[in-house]
Length: 513
Image: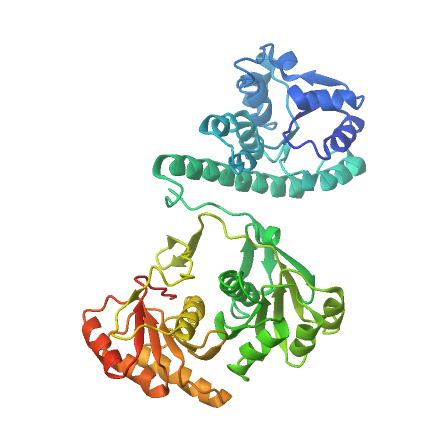
């Protein structure tokens, strides 16, 4: 019996080459609509699905492959005598190859003018059904859903006229990964239609694995990268990114995103925490201010900037050992200088913050937590903030508050940042006590030889007691910014007033656990 291949694709890339390989290997080609037209225009002989089912396409093409002739040809077990007898009794011929990719639902819903009706019309029904039927019977059926796999299929067809069991099994696994993600995208879209754009997904979207990493946080842990990371970032140079590199890149890019406007800015991070941030008229001056905060922690760190990385900054960076450098672009001479460091990872940042985004993490019990990302932009003007002390902040203190509040948002809790208007002066992160974080920040400033007199202290959450505020005042801070909301706010405000400090409550906190 002649071998048969059914092809029905939205993405026509590589279609004709694969169809030619199938025809040359002796397969009869069966197709629908635009796929059949493309193959006929390439000189191939093609049967319409209606030719083998005896049933016309109907309901605007919604019903064409949903037929026992198709699914019986895919699902019947070739080594099951009863199945074979039933297939012969109903004139069902085997279908040996299925090439299907799905209606572009994801691309459709990303269009600004997409309506609910248009989205629904782009929900594929026949495609997933054929893919699942073919994948279930992968021992006998080759099922291809990704044009990236065409080349391997063509190579095997040219070698032997058929595919290997190993390839068929691999392609079947890919089918279920594809259809599960497709269904999840649809479910999430419909959930947002009902509950609003910021609605949490009914089930968290499955993401394809795009890269197996050498290991996770430690060498004994397996790890992989999933999703669309490389649509937002391009690696120009250096070793393959590690799990820890990717976590650090996430933290660095989110921080610099909040500094995207205004003067050139440079941030240095270590273990996702900023250890120095500076702004200045030039990147090199911004680097000097960022590096001045801490001369030790930047070793082996991550450096990110908000402008094209130029040669003066590249020269400064090359004076220390760094793991990753991130910039929107690299000037040619700067790139040439940095590429002299063989292992230094150079990353182009093309990320644009989406309107709504979710963060997720696994917890014990095979469970997970999902939350909307903390995208609340730090206030640029102070208009929404509330002065709670007798003294109003000076213009310099307002500027320091705006700068420092952007930074403290990205420091692990408990977080304390001492800053002026253009640079961090001391950073304390991740301590069980807010006073301890303040002590570390003060100690770091002392180690770096920076004077905290007249600085602003920024706290990611409220001071639960006056002692944290008093410690900041004793260190030299003349102003403070914090969310407020403690039952002892009055005590904290009184302590600030006693010391002549200005203090602002923002009304929102930025915990980072």
